[in-house]
Length: 269
Image (cartoon, rainbow, N blue to C red; front, side, top):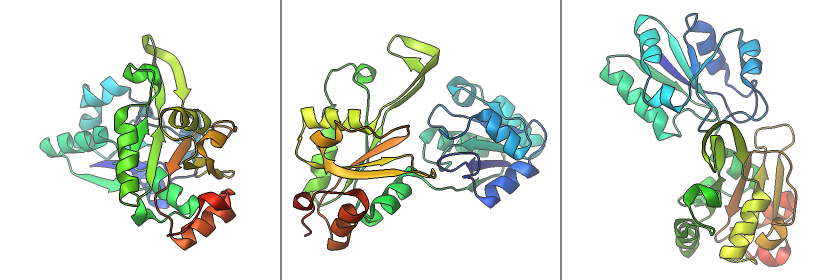
């Protein structure tokens, strides 16, 4: 059995009880993880190992996508778990790993955990069914240009044309920097930086909503014009940025009451 376990949003205690039990039931040496798609900013690998009383074999991208044999071997001979931050099936990398396990006749199961998307809706009061297609805002050097990719602004505009909100995931670069592969490189795009990019390339007066450190004891939620958000400091990562579409009156009240949104930017439909 290969069990995919989501670790949740923030630290070693964000995991579900079911996920914790799956780790406890894994065979010795059969706990694997990857943290290149995302990771827990409130805990490191040592914290996870101490909390669960196990050793974790952290795999890099090549160790998951090109050389997953140790994971499959452990699952074929016993009970193995594969850990990821957030929910466990958000990345196509994880779906591919599960499909490859099935091709080898390995039984799999999935133990879910909270996601950034569900937290963004819960913390802001913006209803989850009113979100459209999400997008990712990359660092300029990561996509070879000095402006926001057209695909990002097109996604926002398309969603707004239908009255829908846009969740912008912000770039994470771990192990790869501007000069290429670098095991010591680690950078997280901040919401103020992201707001500045959109303010310059798109609309400085548009309403934006920042969610910082979702799942932590001290999350931050703030709504304002993109130009104003660009001048703020939202503290430690991870950050997200939402560009709302049309607002239901309850959503408008939530943004004013929970995120300090200006009244003139939160006219309900």
